[in-house]
Length: 354
Image 1 (cartoon, rainbow, N blue to C red):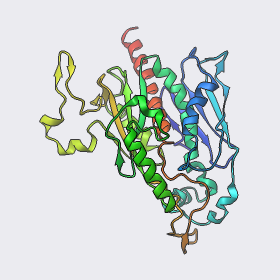
Image 2 (cartoon, rainbow, N blue to C red; image 1 turned 180 degrees about the vertical axis):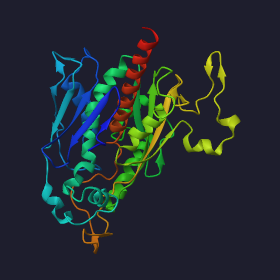
Image 3 (spheres, rainbow, N blue to C red; image 1 turned 90 degrees about the vertical axis):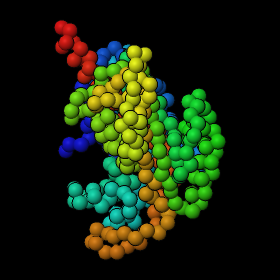
């Protein structure tokens, strides 16, 4: 079935379910002779792992193995297969949900689409699948680094508390990847408060792309901003994407929203680094809205597979907020899209200058 692969020149296919034997990704189209090691991938995967008082107590090591496509520490140009084994699985926690649909999850829609579903931890719709994306994103990050492109994501908002300052040097000073120390403390307090009530909150992740050259993106259906939105909306928790001024642009006049151009460059960046679907050479700025974790211990109304009314309380091991674990996932999806478009542009350049 379609829907598990993203990209044209640089293609990523993820596979596996939350409580299956393993999850993984196949990366095809990566150029040869790029240095790549399991340790490099592991370092980024460790950022996505649960940890701390507000995260799921599920303890997965997320140890990645490179099964193909790399020889003597360098990519071969052939498909790179990555596997992450599931080790800390407690499927019995989901036995009572076999015939019941959890509100806010994909249970109901998966059942309608396939007529059958893996109820254990959400199966393919589980956030666990994103670990495979992060692993593939490291490969993509190596590709775009050749062009001097860097992707940085951070927590802009959690539970209505917004980071007002952005000091990228402080991102690792707190477990939320928040660039505002004061806001980070308030966010942590808010998360603990919500956890005690058995509820959850959402938030906003902001992504900056530095060093992106002008010219990436296709003019109509594969616009760079469209592909970025497509990739980020493909993350289960994301319910909205905006680039540059985003929704605020609808409240501006043209004279306020247009970015003046001078011989020295652009004076503002309301467009967020993309014009006409093609990168302008400015910094690309993206924000994604993440919904609250739907697995909460507050009683909720639902139905079972026979359509009968039920009330459920979700048990098991769950996060209070998808942030900060979703931050490296957002980075990965942006890296994958940029790698694809960078390779497309390199191919076009060869065609223009045979």
